[in-house]
Length: 99
Image (tube, rainbow, N blue to C red; front, side):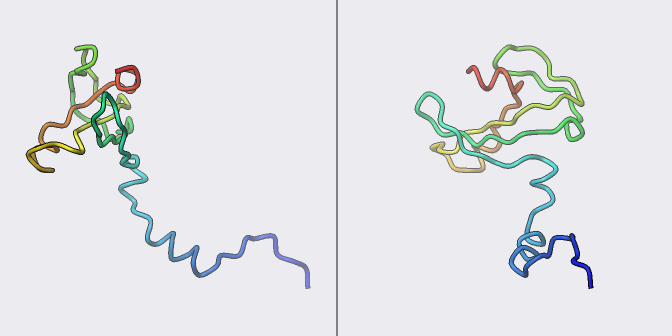
């Protein structure tokens, strides 16, 4: 019988695929970055997920709907995670990188 060229999935790989969160694939992974001695949670927003207008705090210009950008908020705030999440800001990707 001829050999099959299809990749064989192991049980571990199949379980890992099932455990993968679809929202993370859609909205980008959450990362923690350090800038100016502070930790920030940073999450990418894809063009299809960007549905509102925002003002970038880096350049004070608007971020139009359907524009990919990043959302950043403090990871080490004094008043807790809820306040940090409420204070999140939408940045142009370039503005976030150079800030």
